[in-house]
Length: 112
Ligand SMILES: [Zn+2]
Image (cartoon, rainbow, N blue to C red; front, side, top):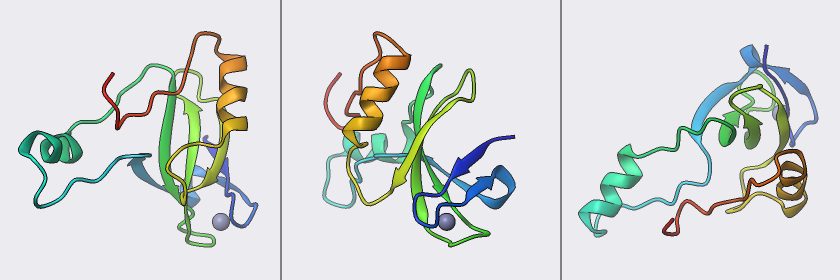
């Protein structure tokens, strides 16, 4: 079972206490943006085999949203952090790079 530590209240919450919120760090495009940007925001998501950044809500705890970085293959959790950030903390990125040589953070809002 997936267990994530809520960065707000510190509880190690089991998956049943949490609600998944999809991919983290999406840049929102709304009315007035061009069609391609809006379509991408609505429909396009990463589906990596490996490191993934996700949004989670501690629904049956403090109720707050946070982000988690984990491996979709091994279910290893690299860390969690508050959702009030546009980029993962550098120490977390360094820790992931150390465990997954060759991996690097890619800002999904910038061209590949
Ligand atoms: Zn919490």
